[in-house]
Amino acid sequence: MKTGWTSALLVAVLVGACQQASDDHINLVAVLPLSGSFASRGEIHKAAIQMALEDIRQERPGGILGRGFRVHLADASDGEDLAAERVRAIVDNKGSANIAGIISSTGAAQAGSLPIALEYGIPHFEISAGDAWDELIATDDPLHANIGFALSTRATCYNLAVMAAEFIAQNETAWPRVALVRGNKAHDKMHIRTIRSTLTAMQQTGTYHGTIVNDEAHEEIPYGDSYEASIAGLATTYDPPPDVIFWHLRGDDHNTRFMQDAKRVSQNQSYSPELVTCGMSRTNYLLDATATGPSVVDYLGGRFWFAMRGPMTDGERLSNFTQAFTAFHGEAPDTWAASAYDAAMLLALGIAQADSTEGATVRDAIVAISHTGTQVSYGETRRALALIGQGVDIDYDGASGTLDIDTASGRVPGRYYVEAMDFTPGSASGAYRVLETPAPQVLF
Image 1 (spheres, rainbow, N blue to C red):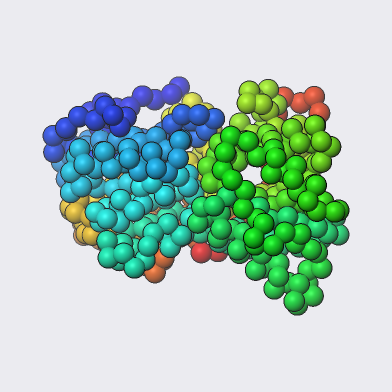
Image 2 (cartoon, one colour; image 1 turned 30 degrees about the vertical axis):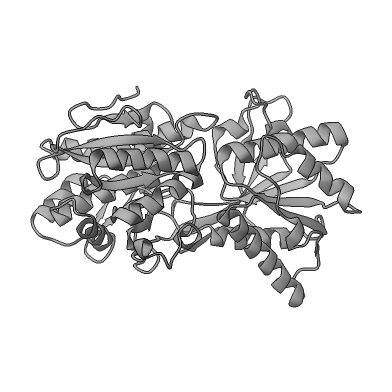
């Protein structure tokens, strides 16, 4: 049965409806996709944050520092600019000193909220986008000089791009010609730059014999409501046309439209290349053969692969979390729910360890409790709070695995792998399948 927000502990406030709250709450901001095709993803991540704070409440009914938690929601479904406006409105309304942490999910959410977090020195957790902080901020800006507030419960997308390039190279016999296309965001450029340089280096060493059909001047595609002309143009511009397209766009809706438009090109113009990307959302929506929008799984099955990163392990802790989350929320978690839970738990335990909500103090406490101490695992919230209360240093390992935060980058290790989408005609849904080659890797 789905669990509602516990009013004594947790109040979700949509931006635009923010009201001044008394200082008897610890304020957190959750920047999530809350509308559109991927609203269900935002609901899952919201529930994971709620579940972590409810676990704290169960063990500490009086709250941390004698205060409960108040979570303010900012919708990131319609782009980073609007996400930034909503986050800044919350911060301005509450006062930056009264915001103890920000948790973001999706690239637009991180891009909209991280610069604000760094501006005010608020600990910021990214749980799914995988952007490196240096892709999003001006490092010579004095407001952003201290990037230590940029934390992540998973490692960077750079590794995904390398894995995607290696996957393309492994399939050079089937895909002798590849096109690399992207949007104009910094994150898009990083992916394509990494893939192009990786494949070029492999060509020089004789480990890749394929051809990248388009040069750097012809890889950008405009963001918009349709990508059909851009996809069809690859078939008319290059002879023979590319066998596989690697694309990268920021935002769930843009990626969904790209796949829908690829299906239309296949139907209308008989150009059906294989598709590869990395770091995009792994959602049940893409598997649904009856989804409105329209459904794409019948087209993508057997022709679509993507490099992913996720929890470190499929071990007992993650299994226990999956069972507990399903009972709590009424549906199964997605790939990133465990990371959302861990981010909220680290923030709460960090505040308890710091005995403060001051940004730098909490940040340092979060890093400290992520490694080097008495090991405490997911499901041991009571023990973690007791040890902190006794002045014992703890090492919290989360539902998603080890959370050893690297002090230089703010990242923790992630598990990297390539998935295929499978679909049997006539089925109601498809399925994701992790490939054995390339083998999954654990990387920072």
